[in-house]
Image 1 (cartoon, one colour):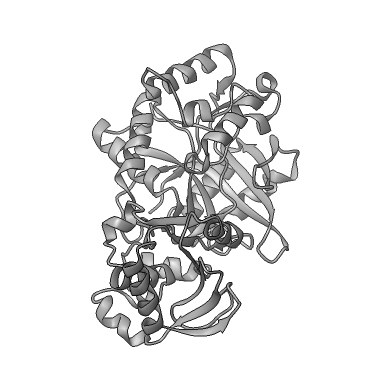
Image 2: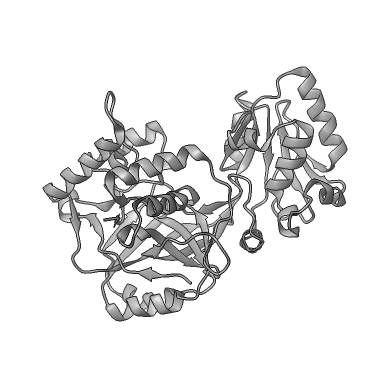
Length: 414
């Protein structure tokens, strides 16, 4: 059962910072050094100063905590006495060019262990990011960015009437998404949202490292209190604006002639070529369909020759997992053909990622990658089916778009 509650939110004072657009940022793992500098050039109060802290010669986490405290004392940040939930709409152009709007509810959610009827993950995590987010939570005692979760029950209809007024803020994000935010203080709406989601199972779409950090932090503090909750944005699985993009794979280490020959022969044995000259597999039907772009400029669409061979490779795995393109690529190409282990994949040893077809091809053309595999989007239904089976996907199996901005609201942990 999901315990969803309003937040005694810490948030920017818009009168002090001028515009929320100048102080929000993409999630920490999508901010490059260059973008971080650009964001801080817009405003010294940009959230990256605390969410992605730097302190040459000092402790970066202590710097984040000190900066946060300074901003609170100086009035840059304001903490509400009155609890609220926050309604968020994100207007963007979908992959087909059509205008879409995704709805979300920002609230605090009780931290639960993974399990049926409670909270389910869908991707494997890595230790490095979890330690980083844990050290930041320990120092600041706030959730600085929301976890993106999906719910079979949709509470948006309970909140939607509150969005008929002027939004608290309107922000154009780095990716072109128009974000509109409403602060909702009506206790009746809070109760309606909590009741609607009280029996809902939550599926983490984005933010697995942050959720596992929240579990660790809850356990090490112990007892009951604000630390038993974490900041989430909740979107219904049937929301018309929910979109999943693919994340493409780059092979970085196949320059060795013997390895390149093994790769070429392995691909020919395991896959049939559907067409040459094409690269985007979106819309293709069948098991294990990919686009392959190689350093010699060749483009082709591939499909797994023998889907029945996956039974032995995925012994003990669910049917949903066996038919998952990123899992097939990891097991058949990275594992069987190239000899990479699961640990190699998680450490990105010889492997890179690209969020667009254009980025993937440019990496190959620039010589920074030896080949690129172009993937189909993973349907939301398949994400749910893998999670329902109690399994987790390979890293970077899904790219839920748009991302949630960091800096709209912060959730106190003490």
